[in-house]
View: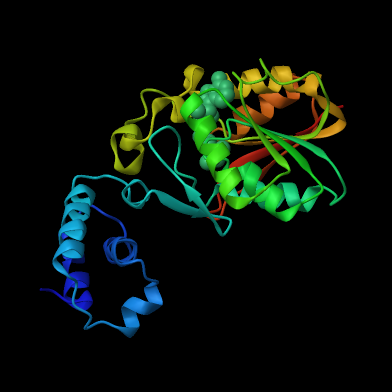
Length: 276
Ligand SMILES: C[S@@+](CC[C@H](N)C(=O)[O-])C[C@H]1O[C@@H](n2cnc3c(N)ncnc32)[C@H](O)[C@@H]1O
């Protein structure tokens, strides 16, 4: 039998992880159903055989590269516990900048908002949790992602979000939104990073776009004016080297007030524009 403390020493086995100790803590919390504070309060607690076996299997899968979020089935985004699976992207902390920016720029009063490519529902649910008066339509093309977003919506009890399957705008009802947000796929299919880390376990449908990763952003920019109110906000996340190209796409599509914002690492990862 091994204790919590002895199991934490096994972080050295997770040689390919950037955060081996944290990964192991999260896996231990998951197996034991405890908090990280509990692990530090009870380092001598001995795992029973069944818990140890479950943990051993999870460690083996982590060594093989599987993301911790897939092993636990959850990832926190904007302090909301979101269920995750292989149907879509694991929400990233950088996307919280998109949420923060939309909250900063928009009034609290009743608004119609569209989240394109909602995945787990991360952006839509974060906005809904902060702005109960907003009505948010969250769409995704992948049926399994739609089911996941709906499961998260329901678990969080956020009645001001509606989840719908749609290929971008194809099934969005003809109406005007004050805000359209999106974190679309934007990685070039030849990008070597697709063969590294967590993204190896995430679907290409959530990651990859044609035209050097810009085809979905182009389509969204082209169609969004039909669905935005005059002066409505378009806010799109993109790759750290794409800001200039995205600003050009938005300007050429006729938007005004085009500007990029930085993520937490200081990279231009978000571009905003107003429908004229
Ligand atoms: C980068 S992920 C973002 C997921 C989530 N919004 C987030 O920020 O964590 C992109 C999402 O776009 C969805 N998607 C890809 N192509 C789409 C399309 N043609 N129409 C609607 N959604 C699409 C994918 O299924 C995926 O869930």
